[in-house]
Image 1 (cartoon, one colour):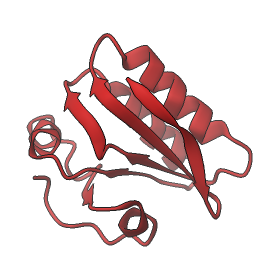
Image 2 (cartoon, one colour):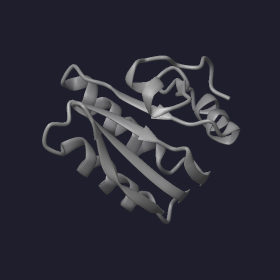
Image 3 (cartoon, helix red, strand yellow):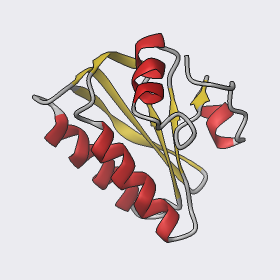
Image 4 (cartoon, one colour):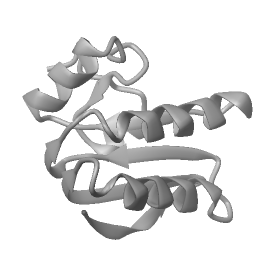
Length: 118
């Protein structure tokens, strides 16, 4: 998994992993999410999966952990993706409502989801 240093959008941090998200990269992904979410000034978290080329179910636990941490403090975690396999994975694991599809970081920031998972 490659990652791009987290960006900041107002009080929102954006994690941008790239490449494969699977069992071999799940520790790096978890570290990226924790570091991004805990960064100074971060009230909300957007995870941009648009550069992810493959994803199995391994990183779902880390996404759910980030979501739970956000919810516990009255905040949110949103996911950007447009890949049909990621949408199917979320649907098959009943996580499509927790992580609705956002087409861009801007859409996630303004809560303009694109409907059901792909």
